[in-house]
Structure formats: C-alpha cells, structure tokens
Length: 175
Ligand code: 5GP
Image (cartoon, protein in one colour):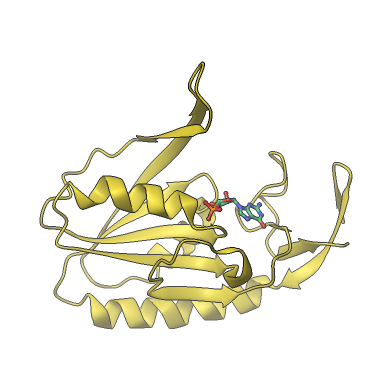
C-alpha cells in the first residue's frame, strides 16, 4: 500500500483493534461506574478511535473534542500550541483524555499543564498507541491499547500528510 512517496504494510488489524477497545471499555465501565466521566478526544487523529470506544461505554458519560493548533510566533523560536474547542467546564470533573498515539509526549504535557489550572477532579490518559522508545516526557498513561516500536504508522484515524485516515487497519511504514 502506498501513500505519497512511502510504502506501508499492515501492522494491526481492525479486528485486533476492536478486541482491544472492548477490553479497555470494560475497564473504564468498571473504573468510572459512578464518576460521570468527560472524555476529551484530541483531534484529528483520535476521532475514529473515540467513536468506536465511546459506543462501548455503557455508563453515563460525555464526550467532547479539542484541537491543538500549532503555530510559530513571529520573531521567536519554538512552537506555540493553543488549545481550541474546550467548551466544557472541567472544574470538578473526571476527565479522560483520548489520544491516538503518544510519541514524544510533548502534546500531552502541554495539555496537562493547561488543565492543571482548571480544577479537574481527576485526569487520566487513554491512548490507542504508545511509542515508549520515543517518549521523553514521563507521563502516566492509564489505558494503553498497544505499545509499538518507533515506526511511523497510518490508518484508523492517523494520517500521513493528510491521507490514510480512512484505512480500517493500522499500517506501518516499510523501511
Ligand atoms: P507527541 O507530542 O507525543 O510527540 O506526538 C503526538 C502526535 O504526533 C500524535 O497525536 C500524532 O498526531 C503525531 N504522531 C506521532 N507519531 C505518529 C505516527 O507514527 N503516525 C502518525 N500518523 N502520527 C504520529
């Protein structure tokens, strides 16, 4: 399978993903039975994972979507990230952040910093994929679907330069 200039091979099937989602949902349904969790899904990558997972949640729960806009401020080095779309009041709420993949952990670190000041009752991370070898910021990941090697992956919501999000299975780059 080819996207742009790169070849990809199948890595994790939609069936494996479905089973993993069922396992994670079981845990969440138990852990948050009386906690009225608010799932905050990070766009764009997590939208398909979130949709599949959320339909397996059978306890009272809300879901909302946020986006991190990355831009370079003129004249200064380094990227500035702005959190967009957080319309819920998260004060005193039990938050579950839903990510597609944790790579370096920078994105999550940034989000956690912003949330710390908003008075959530609890904040836990749920990620479909984690690349432990790439993670430089230590973050406590409560629910992890699959730990994967440090290879670029696409499919199931994740893109390569805009394409590949619609693939049902997860693919990794052929080196
Ligand atoms: P971090 O801030 O943890 O380094 O990066 C997290 C974000 O980088 C993810 O939400 C995702 O958008 C992107 N990312 C990291 N690794 C991959 C990958 O292997 N494939 C794709 N498609 N995106 C990735």
